[in-house]
Length: 301
Image (cartoon, rainbow, N blue to C red):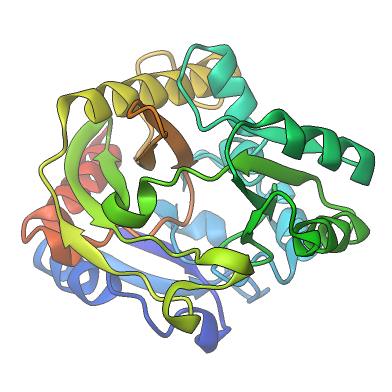
């Protein structure tokens, strides 16, 4: 059995991949031939693998048009997980509106395409601070937290719009400074593990500690957060089934659902990462084996 992990030839983008060492061992122990294949490598015969996991093409934002073309050229390949069409939907965070339409509680979000819309959206939120970011982004790129009165927020929104991207505006959930966010990873529709990620964004468009650094710790996930995770996972799965991207009885191979608490204490979905998420496998000693188990079930189906 041959499985490909879609990655990148940009070594700077993947230098801190905490999952890969554990996955290499787990796949080897299961007798699976695991191949790391860069999406930029035109010599790769993607249809020669029994399964392809879109895992760490973490430079895609820098080469968005090329990556989208690469994805589009592989539509219909049933060995890709998650399916290409789902990734094309999930790559733009406007998918949050689709999930909200299905009843998933999300962080209030306005998607704007002009500075006028930006100003209107910023003033519509009751919070003193807002978060500004592109609808297509990763690693807090072009993302900032600002007071609504800070002109730097408008400058960032203008920069995003000038790149031809939709700008997202959200109220800053102040509890994240003390509580962080909770990420929950599902393999084949079943919860594997959860983790807490400390706040990344500091005031005035800065990063906590002055650089992008993810601080991950173990967490006992509260029941109300799990309710949001279940709602989001179910809604995303139904989107995929309804569009014919997966069969009616199939689950998504993997997904990560990040939840924060709003100022009133209620949990809300911040993001549903259905391609290229870091699973933070070191947080749970059995997590890598659970992922291999999900892959094996696909290979034997």
